Amino acid sequence: MSLTELVACYLLNLLFWLWVVRWGGAEWLEGTFASGFLINIFASRWSAEGIKLFGVLTILISTILFLVAIFYPDFRYFFS
Image (tube, rainbow, N blue to C red; front, side, top):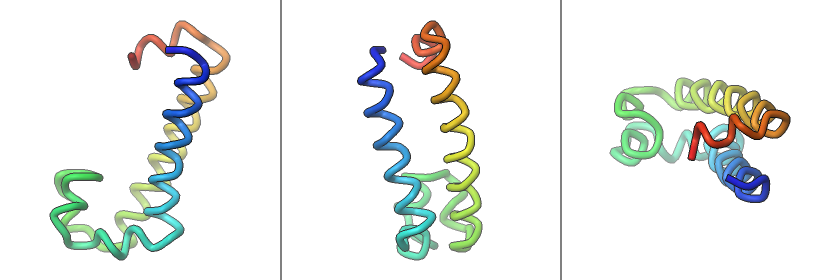
């Protein structure tokens, strides 16, 4: 995976999770089949706060992995 592809994938992922956490996505997904499909199989039972917590943790972990993949290019091929 090239650096451009890595950055594009990270930005798309970040944009989705920011929508969930900050822009009302958690409230929209709360209790729906879509939350189970898009987030986690158990997310349809979670409250909006639980979905937001999952989103914040996902952003944190994906940012750490993104930074590792920038500085260690061999790590990128682990995900492709």
